[in-house]
Length: 65
Image (cartoon, rainbow, N blue to C red):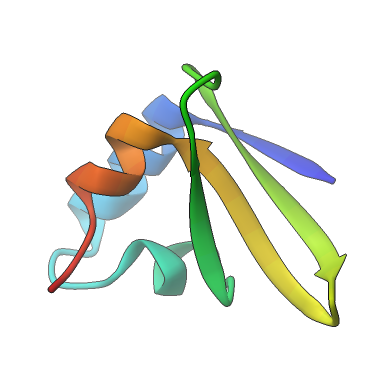
């Protein structure tokens, strides 16, 4: 499991305008967690897919559609 600071993700998203959070993190889907605040967790193999768990605020900030 990898952990990425929210500040690093915000910088990454600023460098890649128009991209989705899923594409920037190279994951199938980003799930929200109300208890996380400063890190995003990347899980390598959940039902055969790579997913991320992010603070709700971060996921909603970069949600498309």
